[in-house]
Length: 112
Image (cartoon, rainbow, N blue to C red; front, side, top):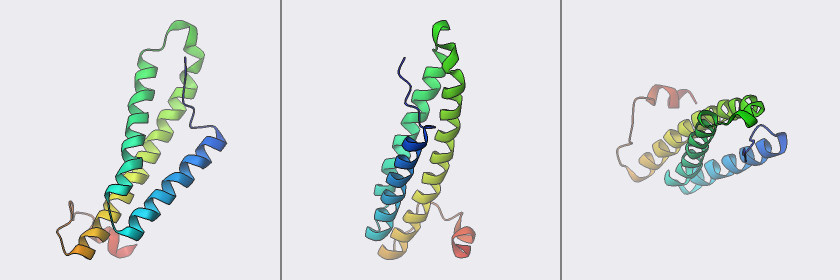
């Protein structure tokens, strides 16, 4: 059974660097769809890991702890990229004088 282990330190660092670079790129070119790429990727990883956990066979029970740690890291990355998407969407909306998708976090962005 193949498990994409994102709790491995090297994989974690590479994913973090790629995510930060995509967020920075989206912020620089003021396009929110660039930050949507890692968000969708982490959501797919989350679904993949949950499916693996639910359908794990008896011979691979020892992988449950690894998969559960991967699910926790997926949730953290989804949270980070979701807030980054909202942030870049707000930047894009201000640059193009359009209404943002969601203005409910305006109080938060003013403090950042």
